[in-house]
Length: 242
Image (cartoon, rainbow, N blue to C red; front, side, top):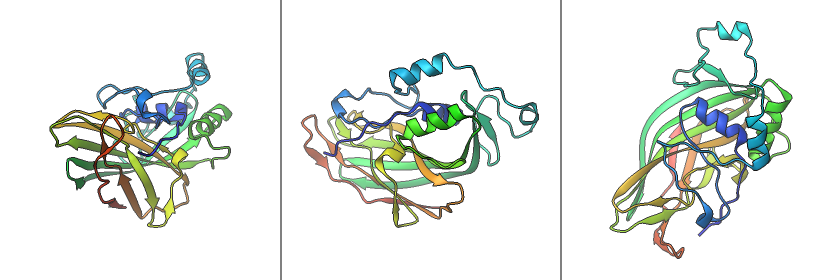
């Protein structure tokens, strides 16, 4: 079973809350993962980041932005062009909201992608840029930068609980592979009870907003028992066209 690399999620916490979905970073140890589902969003952040956010003075949104009809104070973005601000000063603008019903299966496990959102993220403050770099564990991130969010449901059709390893691989335009620290995936290491389903949202760092996305390939894991032995093989990848 693949071991997942832990990724800080301070800036993703704000981004996922703004879009109305929960998220959590991949963990390097599946046994230490905290169980969660989409109805109870929680985000794992390092102690220092959590402290910084708790003591952070909220970013003051310019009045010109507040009076823009596309500004969403509550942060729930559903229509292209709508935007919101996080506490650190990152402006999150929804570019595309694509409803989907694409599935891939392997005996005993089924993945279904139900939505894909594309965002422009513009860090208006030095603090916001630093948090983005920390979140993805990357020294340099272009500003503005582009992210993708995918919502998916995992169903276990077997008569016993299984664990999953989440997203194994993300490819853009059929050739460009996204590095592991560019993916925040809350499903990695999660337990799916017998004959039940759970829904998750994952965030993907694309890079500069000038990069044109035409195709997204998502490769999910199979399922495993408590000992890490495979129960179901990894299903074929799902291809999303933009």
